[in-house]
Image 1 (cartoon, rainbow, N blue to C red):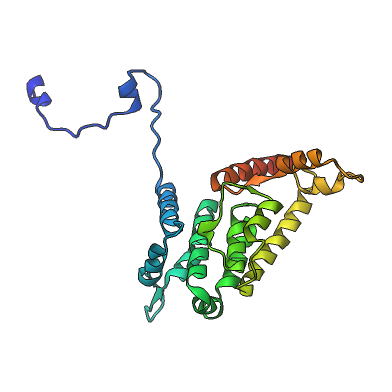
Image 2: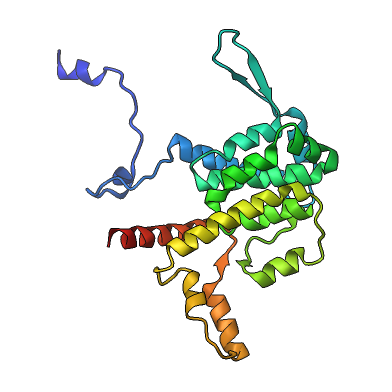
Amino acid sequence: MSALSRSSTPAFARRSTAQDTNGTGGANTSKYLGKKQLGTKILGMYAGLLCEKGNLVNIRKFARTVTNKVRIISARKEVAVLNSHQWLLYLLAEDDAETVVYGCKILARLLVTHGSAYTSKFAGKTGGFIIMAQRLKRWWDIPTLWPICFAILFGYDVADIDFARNFEFFSLVETFGKSKIVYPDALPIITSMLQVGIKDVLKHQDDPDSPAQDIVHAPTFPQPPAERIETRHHRSRSMDLSKALESRGMFSSRSFSLARC
């Protein structure tokens, strides 16, 4: 075939890359999200819509309309229909911390905004709080999860929590200090996370950044107020999810290094 006929052959247009745009010979710097990462980002946007402060329309519509049919592999080929809170419990079984936090946040608002009748059904028929305790305990070191779990215990709307604050005693007191326990069935979630957290802290007490070091090397004399404030701010961690996951990743890498020593 001639050069003219080859040039007239139709071909698919190639997507322009960073290399084409910049005119350089370097590697393509474009970043693409995988399916799982994209799904997590969409879930985060979904959580933002459902947990919007002052807006209960979306979460109530979610509770009414969201169902998911799951086909059980058996001889009878039964089809189970999951309601909204059962679907969210499946998200808590994921290995991705970000997905777990988003699912827990939506679930917390769903329970608190729908009252005791909805929560009693969740606790009794579904066994939801026991399932939450089993699935959330390994994520005890994510500061974002603690105020969400306390919000369920005290019947506090997660939309009213300022997650930009640091995770510390005074922040929790200011948020939940005037609240009373509304749903005691949620207490096993807190206790299971505490139990696993204490075991992990004792296991990593040789790490210089472990909270156990604060107990071992605690001063026997009263500290001046300025020093107490400085120490408290140094040890505090943010409740913001992105910062919490970044801090968690740094500690995990240090723990792995110590384990290899």
